[in-house]
Length: 346
Ligand SMILES: *Cc1c(COP(=O)(O)O)cnc(C)c1O
Image 1: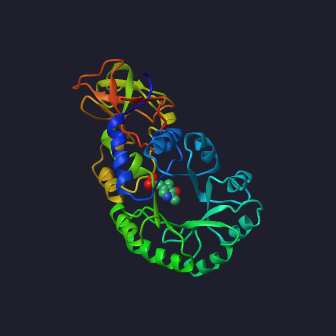
Image 2: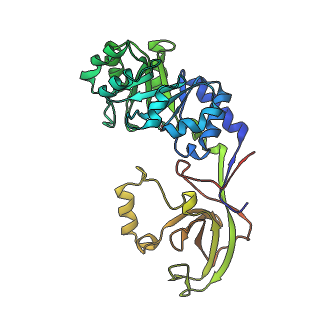
Image 3: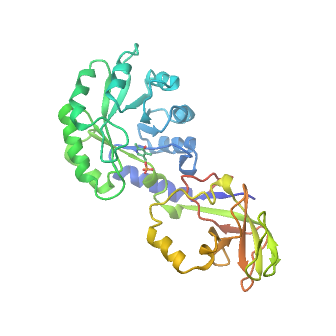
């Protein structure tokens, strides 16, 4: 192992998946993008194990990549695009359910010919991303004759309490057309309450992060120490030949931009305040250094310079005991942007 490794405590992870599935009536697992670090085909296999009848993907390409791993229905989450030939083909597939976010697309789908396309109709929420405004929802009813309308899709913001909006929009949508409500990002407890009040088979919840990454203790990510070099203060190192600020060691670890290391997805948690504190307190961050996600000798270490494609240089102060070449060290990665060199099921 010389790359970045994801280790899955498989029994524990699957137990968590099972528990979420049992708690959430009508759960639809989401497998999209990098497959939350596991890969979409792996997630589709796990969804099969869970016994769910439907899975959700983002794009037509993702739908293709999982078809052989999942035998049930596949929802495409991104709005259906009449200009994409792959999307048009998918709308004819009896296993596919496409998401429609504009009234004009309902008309195009209704005129595709052949069997009725299966659609979810997206309601515009306070996200203001995609969807049909509430006042236009009654117009959807007219297409019922030509389309198999599987439900309304209601995608809410993650922040703050969304349950009120979920219920309000759900009521309005069902007044326009009485089909199931497919929610995203309603807090689990609120969703369970809404699902109970509306009755079995009347609601669905798409879940990605809380399902696949909801038990972080089941997942461990490590990198390998590739090389260790002592260095004296003032000596230069790395591509950029910066001078070492103190005596210590350069530790070369596996993992770089190719693995998503150093490419932190923008985080809402990193507040203006925390940035202001780091500027005010000076130190390495103010000097242009970045804290690395690698834990070596008991703490997070600073990058010597921006990570390379497949390895990174980090600095270890002289007072600490350097690791041995070949050691595995913990590395924090954001699973939704990470690419692992190896995934091990324990
Ligand atoms: C990606 C996505 C989800 C899953 O999001 P998580 O935050 O990972 O649970 C749910 N619904 C829609 C419409 C999405 O695009």
